[in-house]
Length: 530
Image 1 (cartoon, rainbow, N blue to C red):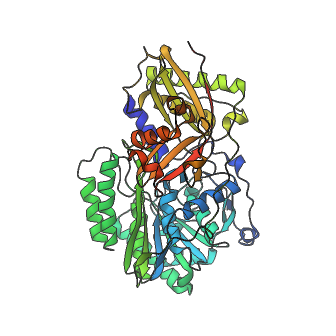
Image 2: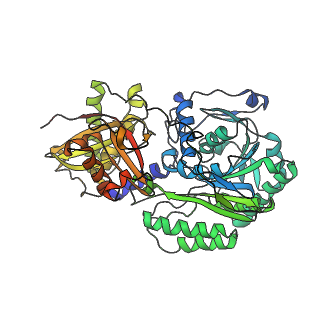
Image 3: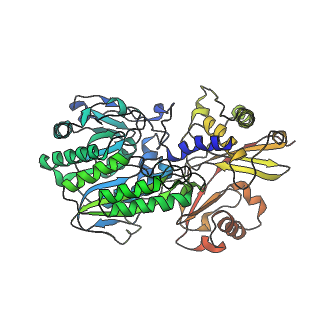
């Protein structure tokens, strides 16, 4: 029963499953004149408000903040292509930012996006030939001339816009491109399960078309692929680093052997090494045609590094293909040049009637799961309940913690998130045995709705009993909700225990300038005491 629930949650972590009910009403963008001039269909966003913020201002802040956190990478050679992940921004934007920072200083007019279809089986690669893709930041026009040229160079590609409609893997790349390269044009290409010879033929056709366009120096290939699904964090690190080392040899046979070795090793829950394996091989072939001779790995992380749940993770890697050179780290930009941190948003509030409703939803969700082993669905038209929200659900028993799990960034509706994480708190908190049906009547449920995280320079601005705090250094991360202040008499004790207990860092790590500190506020409500 618990494994079934974890399998459901793995889809949230990796964001590889199509999420129905996307909040498209939150997307505040309109087609551009460039798209209209292209005289083609405008594809609406499929995952705005879930994989990334649905409002333009919030989305722009998310992208600029992710880029600001990364040291500038100055490639010595000419960037030809990048590998970048495609999960929800809370999980993978920090990794994707490494690839985009490496090309940020270049003049890029066109981008060929190559990914794999998650929803449609494909015999040939699917090219979206004209029109535009819409995001909250506006419309991104398709370069119809380049799309036609690519189609002519490879008979393994065809015009097919249907698989693009629900697909997230290319869409999540667009806000980074819009922020860094205003006016950029794209050619979206999706691949399916196909032999390596077909991948190579597709890639070589893409490379030849770019080469013949006369604009190879201002055209970038973006290969969208996550890495391992869904082993433990330790297994993911081993598998993914092996694959990335093989990728860095720029040898298709080495990479294929590394993937095959991992898939044959009997690693529990390892579904794949690259979820866009075909697009990776096609990109290698295209980059080689365009003169790339070096692959440089820029960064790696997995979802366990971000959310702390290392039982079932998804891996994320970022790499760059270069012509004649190596990538090297440059000094970090001065604070004067860095993008300012976004101001904190107004804390979320929930009406009294919906507080009661959500507490009932949480209890019913747990009871239904314990009885039937599956998720219970709730329906509503209430706009407050349909608003995306970051939520923690806490269970206590006779005043003692019995389970607490949540999510740090809004991606699903308040209603869905409460229902999902109530069950997670009951059966998936590794600190406790799963809740039983006999225990449920004695549990007390508390729901905490989080404001967006705000990066702070040091602990001076942390307000006891007001702020929740997140500490992060490298792969270590821990969070305390504001409710935890009641167990401490001083800020120092609170922060020491947060570092030691939750982040597994030295107690005084919060005083180290290398440790990142974030604050947030909470709107919390709970069931009456019994």
